[in-house]
Image (cartoon, rainbow, N blue to C red; front, top):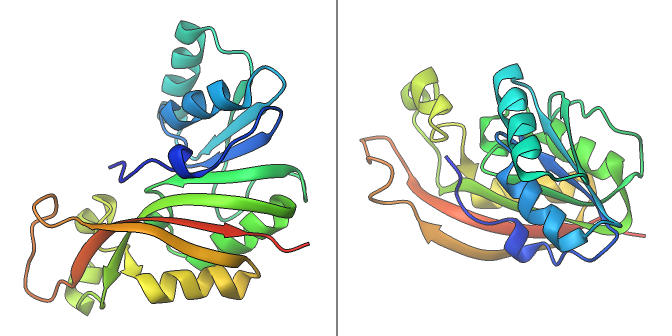
Length: 195
């Protein structure tokens, strides 16, 4: 479930190296590749072989040369330290059981003074324990979501600064609301690794 456009708030520039967390079929990678141009490079990381096959097939169809897809988990990125200019993520961090590890990895691989651009599902409040334990709802990008203030707090704890919730729109109507369920939003968030 994509929940927004991280590319549209990433302020990508020609020549930058971009990392997409949970790249799926590659759409955000291909959009980013256009913006960074031939002098730039985009790396998509996904943990599922099926999505990597789909992304690579899409790459061949589109004839894109400045995109690469790697198998890996967003909590343990297959990347060198200080190697990335921009990290993007479209509705994937909510699926991670250890979100703190994701943000720690983000700061590890980012070059100093560069940024992240995230679209994700967040909440106002918390899910009941019963709903949080529902694996099907977690897989639907629902119950893995956490409170927006907790989410941005984890980003801050990892060492990122200039955290900004660019926009937040209600997911009411997209997600069926049940008892014990907080209000759910799609949020676009930016932050920066300090010098």
